[in-house]
Image (cartoon, rainbow, N blue to C red; front, side, top):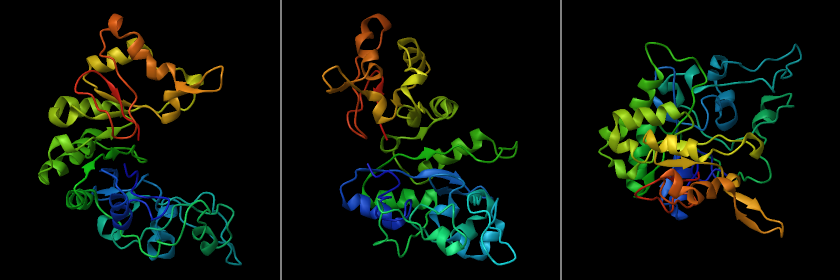
Length: 298
């Protein structure tokens, strides 16, 4: 799976990054979906990452940022750690004038050049001369041409939704763009950390909802893994795929061997009592079950 394309080598969520991922063998590509000021869907990992993933600060659009750069009397950048530029700050037309860059920034910078030219050594700028940004609809057409499956993630909005553009409108708009492009629901694994998004798709777009992915945002084992009852409840609501982070599916035994975690084994051990089909942890796009609940890790 190409998560954001090939974000360690090419500017993420760009034509170049997606094409590279497909050429490297990725059979599923991801567009993280967010929206512009005029509610056009675009591919960005976060609604407010333009300051670190594009060249917006080197353009006149910097003044439109939610938190634009500020300078002292000597011309030194004074708020590097606070700069925030969101897709919702600009229109689609303005978004399309930007170019992608390798994601990162220097929060201690005193110039915009220092702020922007901060690619860490575990990434590369060898292929970052040009990053062509894409809308969600453009990503669909590109993915079709690359003959890959698609796993869009509906990103949590960073601004308050309004009665004129609700969370449900946003979730429906994403699915509508696949329908308009003639994409089979079998080729789309819609994702969200928001369970209500997944339940909305299950209820209103049943064919897409069948393989909608509920992303588990567990951050630490201390938070506690879902119980059998939790998983049964999700299944009862129609959720077929849950996606915990990889670490949550793994544990280390007394002999320091890597083994399946309680999270990974819980449904299988209790399947008879709880009425769940036995499941296995799948890696990225592999091993989706036709029945029961499976794990899908992004």
